Length: 138
Image 1 (cartoon, rainbow, N blue to C red):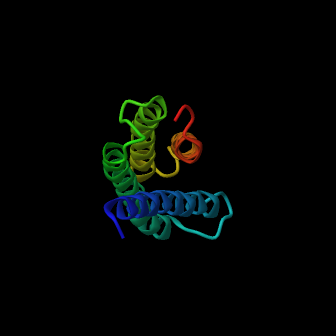
Image 2 (cartoon, rainbow, N blue to C red):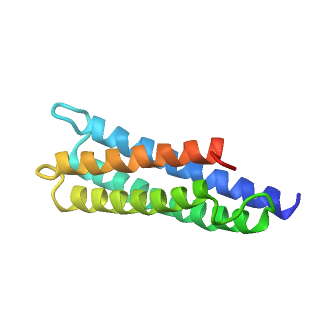
């Protein structure tokens, strides 16, 4: 395997980690609803693992994605779809971090705000995936 193959594999693996961890976090949101099967300490324990996994995946996508853009001749780091993805990456990181902080500080009173921030993180991540798959303008 060549460098390109490794970079692409690690970039996609990092994206998979982000999506899997976001899915786990949405599972916590659903399971902790009123009358749900999951209680606070269990949710906090799962969230304490899944939340940082989103961050780790985002860092992996950034590092390997930028490396790919610099390594592959047909892409340029200044391509519009790459710049858009980088801006959206920052928004996703901010929203996810803020959601995690909100849920940690007060999971009951901050639930609505945390859910909104998590929805922003998820929606932005989805748009990034669309940009990465279709590469508009490339």
